[in-house]
Length: 266
Ligand SMILES: C[S@@+](CC[C@H](N)C(=O)[O-])C[C@H]1O[C@@H](n2cnc3c(N)ncnc32)[C@H](O)[C@@H]1O
Image (cartoon, rainbow, N blue to C red; front, top):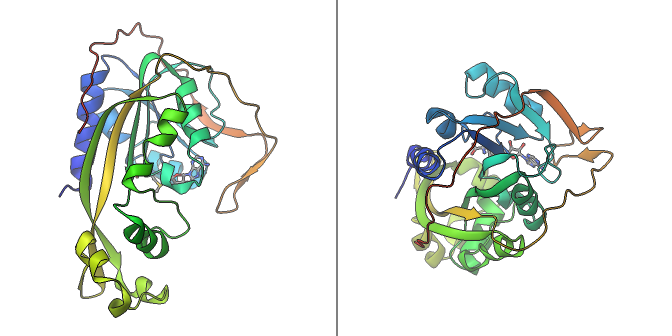
């Protein structure tokens, strides 16, 4: 089993190994916890989120550098084609019923030879998926392990590394009860699969996660989609022009070379 700190270390190590240079975009960054691994190994990270509050918190906490936070919709990234060396998202893609358009946008803004990295939760089978989607990741769209890679391929991304792990989570037992989860009604197989257990007011469970590294692949077009006039996020925040920049510097134009081709699958 791994922890959040292990995942952060994996992200930093991956960036160090894959990219000798600078430019990283973290999509759905919130307070920049997922940007930190890249900043920690000297990368210049732009943190993007649809909600400004989290980004502001991240700047205050020192997770995000001032001038490196962008408020925008992940579906319409406010950047030209191919300007990032690495585009990353963590705990982001499962928020959407259709992941394809988000992955296609990530692919568009990553340069040829660059990388798209994804870290997300997943389910092992239909009953675990139903339980997690109903009680833990409410109103979200956790995929089963077998469904995870398809949208990446459909977006033209070529997955080079897949690392399947399990992360320990702690949830509020009260919240589970409010959602109607009667402990005795949770199937034993689901409890066993997730190592579901209670202690005090907390419920502990081990959830599978996947850590993916992909490149842009050979084929496919990288065209910028039309920008919408106004978008409301799930929490009701609306940004009228498709983007609101909290002050962003163009990433440094370094001359990067791809160091190595990987073909490892976990
Ligand atoms: C679960 S949080 C993950 C935060 C961070 N990546 C981490 O690993 O700690 C998901 C984030 O995605 C953001 N988000 C949701 N929909 C979005 C969208 N359409 N475009 C950009 N960000 C979005 C949310 O505001 C939230 O901050």
